[in-house]
Image: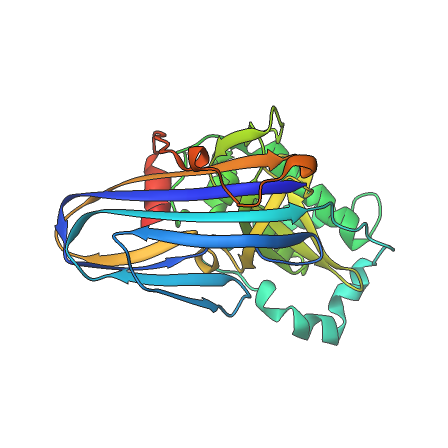
Length: 316
């Protein structure tokens, strides 16, 4: 599937700020499931861009606006070709999770973090799910994915960044970041390495994963990947109870949200920002794909109401 993506964020400050320094993580990665065809970033006021690949393999575009300003707009455009991930070729027993080589390779994705710090009750719940009806790793991960999708109700604005994941589970509500963090925590609590994934989802409904038409306006999305011994990473989307497929576009992965925030920055001055962010995705017909990534009409301003949680995520 060929997808053209436009990620846009606007900051409007209520008084002038003297300087802002920012890091953008919006560029889709190229891997066995997707191929990046084109990518570009524009900033207003204009700023020099420094791009590099971080520790986790994600492209980072760093820029600083040194002149005084009351508005900042960042637009990242990408064209990507996606396909379904390859199927796992064999079952991997739960006992294989304890192999020394596997543990050493995935050590960073086995430890609790600020967003994935589980308690013993969660670990007991995960063990019960993992040992039901068989003992292979992929089946256990799938059951944990279904459990998260069943236990949480999708409710924008219901949670805040940094809220303990045990509290999220107890409340039973959250957004895609919470679903991903909970799935990661449950996997790690029973020794299955798992990582948080940031990306885009081509869907007209972020909760169901449904597609209607060739154009959607959405927000960034999150899911998780679990390591299966001898097989690689198994990607699953607990928010939509889906296996990750062609409609998912991966930006990057890390231990949790803090390793792959779409946009993080600091500024100097008393001004308080109002944040407006959106993602526009168009599915392209291969028979009539344009030579350029985005038509100008796709870059038109989009105003969508922002929840408190979404504003905080964009400021961090």
